[in-house]
Image (cartoon, rainbow, N blue to C red):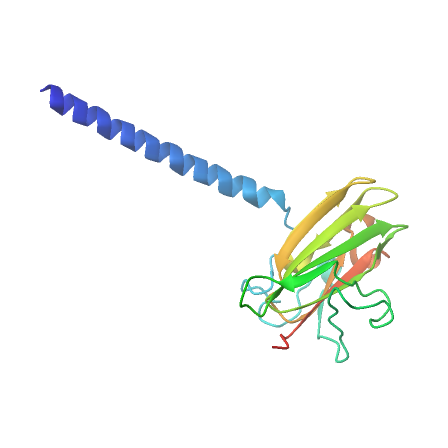
Length: 198
Protein backbone atom coordinates (compact mmCIF):
# COMPACT_ATOMS: atom_id res chain seq x y z
CA UNK A 1 0.00 0.00 0.00
CA UNK A 2 2.86 2.40 0.79
CA UNK A 3 4.37 1.78 -2.68
CA UNK A 4 1.03 2.74 -4.29
CA UNK A 5 1.01 6.11 -2.51
CA UNK A 6 4.71 6.63 -3.20
CA UNK A 7 4.17 5.96 -6.93
CA UNK A 8 1.17 8.27 -6.98
CA UNK A 9 3.21 10.95 -5.24
CA UNK A 10 5.98 10.55 -7.84
CA UNK A 11 3.45 10.83 -10.65
CA UNK A 12 2.12 14.08 -9.17
CA UNK A 13 5.67 15.42 -8.85
CA UNK A 14 6.45 14.58 -12.50
CA UNK A 15 3.18 16.12 -13.73
CA UNK A 16 3.86 19.24 -11.64
CA UNK A 17 7.40 19.56 -12.99
CA UNK A 18 6.15 19.20 -16.58
CA UNK A 19 3.50 21.87 -15.95
CA UNK A 20 6.14 24.26 -14.58
CA UNK A 21 8.37 23.66 -17.64
CA UNK A 22 5.46 24.27 -20.04
CA UNK A 23 4.55 27.50 -18.23
CA UNK A 24 8.20 28.64 -18.33
CA UNK A 25 8.35 27.96 -22.09
CA UNK A 26 5.15 29.94 -22.70
CA UNK A 27 6.47 32.86 -20.63
CA UNK A 28 9.77 32.71 -22.56
CA UNK A 29 7.94 32.87 -25.89
CA UNK A 30 5.80 35.82 -24.78
CA UNK A 31 8.79 37.74 -23.38
CA UNK A 32 10.88 36.95 -26.49
CA UNK A 33 8.22 38.36 -28.78
CA UNK A 34 7.98 41.59 -26.79
CA UNK A 35 11.71 42.42 -27.04
CA UNK A 36 11.35 43.56 -30.65
CA UNK A 37 8.09 45.47 -30.84
CA UNK A 38 6.39 44.60 -34.11
CA UNK A 39 5.05 47.40 -36.25
CA UNK A 40 1.54 47.45 -37.61
CA UNK A 41 2.76 45.64 -40.72
CA UNK A 42 2.68 41.84 -40.69
CA UNK A 43 4.31 41.20 -44.07
CA UNK A 44 7.73 40.03 -42.91
CA UNK A 45 9.91 38.97 -45.83
CA UNK A 46 9.95 35.24 -46.26
CA UNK A 47 7.17 34.76 -43.73
CA UNK A 48 4.31 34.52 -46.20
CA UNK A 49 3.57 38.24 -46.24
CA UNK A 50 3.52 40.38 -49.35
CA UNK A 51 7.22 41.12 -49.20
CA UNK A 52 8.02 37.42 -48.84
CA UNK A 53 6.02 36.85 -52.02
CA UNK A 54 8.18 39.42 -53.81
CA UNK A 55 5.50 42.10 -53.92
CA UNK A 56 5.25 45.46 -52.21
CA UNK A 57 4.34 45.69 -48.55
CA UNK A 58 2.39 48.72 -47.53
CA UNK A 59 3.28 50.78 -44.49
CA UNK A 60 1.71 53.84 -42.92
CA UNK A 61 -0.52 55.85 -45.23
CA UNK A 62 -0.59 52.99 -47.80
CA UNK A 63 2.84 54.01 -49.10
CA UNK A 64 4.79 51.06 -50.48
CA UNK A 65 7.88 50.16 -48.46
CA UNK A 66 9.19 47.71 -51.08
CA UNK A 67 10.90 48.40 -54.41
CA UNK A 68 12.97 46.41 -56.90
CA UNK A 69 16.69 46.10 -56.18
CA UNK A 70 18.56 48.84 -58.08
CA UNK A 71 20.50 47.45 -61.06
CA UNK A 72 23.77 49.10 -60.01
CA UNK A 73 23.60 48.04 -56.35
CA UNK A 74 26.90 47.72 -54.49
CA UNK A 75 27.14 45.29 -51.57
CA UNK A 76 30.25 46.45 -49.70
CA UNK A 77 32.30 44.38 -47.29
CA UNK A 78 34.31 45.69 -44.35
CA UNK A 79 37.30 46.41 -46.62
CA UNK A 80 35.36 48.83 -48.84
CA UNK A 81 36.32 52.48 -48.84
CA UNK A 82 34.07 55.53 -48.84
CA UNK A 83 35.12 56.24 -52.43
CA UNK A 84 34.17 52.74 -53.61
CA UNK A 85 30.52 52.87 -52.51
CA UNK A 86 27.74 55.35 -53.25
CA UNK A 87 27.21 58.19 -50.81
CA UNK A 88 25.22 57.22 -47.72
CA UNK A 89 25.64 53.45 -48.20
CA UNK A 90 26.84 51.89 -44.96
CA UNK A 91 30.14 50.05 -44.98
CA UNK A 92 29.83 47.16 -42.53
CA UNK A 93 32.11 47.30 -39.48
CA UNK A 94 32.22 43.50 -39.70
CA UNK A 95 31.62 41.29 -42.73
CA UNK A 96 32.57 37.69 -42.03
CA UNK A 97 31.22 34.26 -42.94
CA UNK A 98 28.19 33.51 -40.75
CA UNK A 99 29.59 30.02 -40.06
CA UNK A 100 32.35 27.81 -41.44
CA UNK A 101 31.55 26.47 -44.89
CA UNK A 102 28.53 28.69 -45.60
CA UNK A 103 28.10 31.35 -48.27
CA UNK A 104 26.13 33.80 -46.12
CA UNK A 105 27.80 36.48 -44.02
CA UNK A 106 27.32 38.27 -40.74
CA UNK A 107 27.26 41.99 -41.50
CA UNK A 108 27.41 44.52 -38.63
CA UNK A 109 26.39 48.11 -39.38
CA UNK A 110 26.39 51.31 -37.31
CA UNK A 111 23.66 53.88 -37.93
CA UNK A 112 23.17 57.19 -36.11
CA UNK A 113 20.01 59.24 -35.89
CA UNK A 114 20.80 62.94 -35.64
CA UNK A 115 19.24 66.11 -36.98
CA UNK A 116 16.11 64.26 -38.06
CA UNK A 117 17.86 61.75 -40.34
CA UNK A 118 19.69 58.43 -40.35
CA UNK A 119 23.39 58.35 -41.28
CA UNK A 120 24.27 56.36 -43.27
CA UNK A 121 20.77 55.68 -44.49
CA UNK A 122 21.27 52.63 -46.73
CA UNK A 123 22.25 49.12 -45.67
CA UNK A 124 23.07 46.51 -48.32
CA UNK A 125 23.34 42.74 -47.93
CA UNK A 126 22.80 39.49 -49.80
CA UNK A 127 19.94 37.07 -49.20
CA UNK A 128 20.78 34.73 -46.35
CA UNK A 129 23.08 37.24 -44.64
CA UNK A 130 22.58 37.99 -40.96
CA UNK A 131 22.33 41.75 -40.51
CA UNK A 132 23.11 43.39 -37.18
CA UNK A 133 22.34 47.11 -36.87
CA UNK A 134 23.75 49.18 -34.00
CA UNK A 135 21.43 52.19 -33.88
CA UNK A 136 22.37 55.28 -31.83
CA UNK A 137 20.15 58.30 -31.11
CA UNK A 138 22.39 61.37 -30.94
CA UNK A 139 20.39 64.57 -30.36
CA UNK A 140 16.98 63.30 -29.15
CA UNK A 141 14.84 60.17 -28.87
CA UNK A 142 14.36 58.26 -32.13
CA UNK A 143 12.83 54.97 -33.08
CA UNK A 144 13.94 52.82 -35.97
CA UNK A 145 11.11 50.85 -37.59
CA UNK A 146 11.65 48.01 -40.05
CA UNK A 147 8.02 47.37 -41.13
CA UNK A 148 8.86 44.56 -43.54
CA UNK A 149 10.72 42.71 -40.79
CA UNK A 150 8.18 43.50 -38.07
CA UNK A 151 10.78 45.20 -35.84
CA UNK A 152 10.94 48.49 -34.00
CA UNK A 153 13.39 49.80 -31.41
CA UNK A 154 13.39 53.13 -29.59
CA UNK A 155 16.60 54.74 -28.36
CA UNK A 156 16.73 57.67 -25.97
CA UNK A 157 19.25 60.47 -26.62
CA UNK A 158 22.75 58.98 -26.37
CA UNK A 159 21.48 55.40 -26.23
CA UNK A 160 22.40 52.56 -28.63
CA UNK A 161 20.06 49.70 -29.52
CA UNK A 162 20.79 46.60 -31.60
CA UNK A 163 18.47 44.97 -34.13
CA UNK A 164 19.32 41.71 -35.86
CA UNK A 165 17.57 39.86 -38.66
CA UNK A 166 18.26 37.54 -41.56
CA UNK A 167 17.95 39.13 -44.99
CA UNK A 168 15.39 36.85 -46.61
CA UNK A 169 13.51 38.44 -49.50
CA UNK A 170 15.09 40.32 -52.40
CA UNK A 171 14.18 43.99 -52.63
CA UNK A 172 14.76 47.52 -51.44
CA UNK A 173 12.87 47.93 -48.16
CA UNK A 174 12.21 51.29 -46.50
CA UNK A 175 12.76 51.82 -42.79
CA UNK A 176 11.95 54.99 -40.86
CA UNK A 177 11.48 56.78 -37.56
CA UNK A 178 7.78 56.31 -36.85
CA UNK A 179 7.66 58.97 -34.11
CA UNK A 180 9.30 61.49 -36.48
CA UNK A 181 6.53 61.14 -39.07
CA UNK A 182 7.25 57.78 -40.69
CA UNK A 183 7.82 57.71 -44.43
CA UNK A 184 6.88 61.38 -44.72
CA UNK A 185 9.75 62.44 -42.43
CA UNK A 186 13.42 63.00 -43.27
CA UNK A 187 14.36 60.05 -41.01
CA UNK A 188 13.99 57.41 -43.71
CA UNK A 189 16.45 54.82 -44.95
CA UNK A 190 16.63 51.62 -46.98
CA UNK A 191 17.70 48.02 -46.61
CA UNK A 192 18.75 46.60 -49.97
CA UNK A 193 18.78 42.79 -50.18
CA UNK A 194 20.34 41.53 -53.39
CA UNK A 195 20.32 37.95 -54.69
CA UNK A 196 23.35 36.08 -53.43
CA UNK A 197 26.41 36.38 -55.66
CA UNK A 198 27.68 32.87 -54.87
